[in-house]
Image 1 (tube, rainbow, N blue to C red):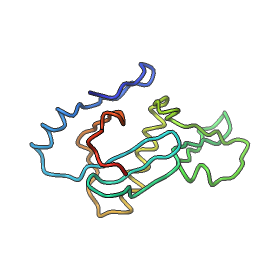
Image 2 (image 1 turned 180 degrees about the vertical axis):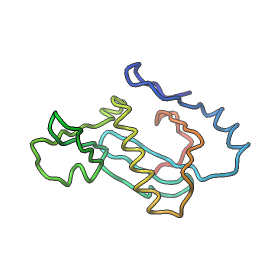
Image 3 (image 1 turned 30 degrees about the vertical axis):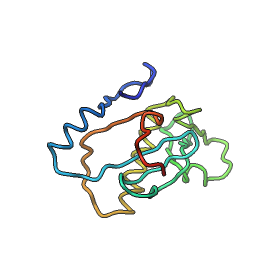
Length: 144
């Protein structure tokens, strides 16, 4: 079953496990990226690894005046700026519920592009599919 997103947040297509299993058999084998988005931390790595390659704060920071496009800071960058009056911090997942899909997507992109690519050999830029599920539905998966 797919991840439930409130209508205000649901904008992207999610693929069921059955659809992903059918696609994986048809395509070349590509290592799967695992993203565990929690309320306070995001963990990212590759399926089959014993532990995540990357752990970072699950926070987005925006700074700037209302009259200009805000600078977006992700994860550690958002927290390392120190106390800045114009910096607004948000968490896309709160109490286990995805409340801001756009900010969650910023975190996921940062984890994949800045975090996992630095820690691995180039794997190509194509994301061939996405499966997103709730943690209790992934009971058969190894815990990090």
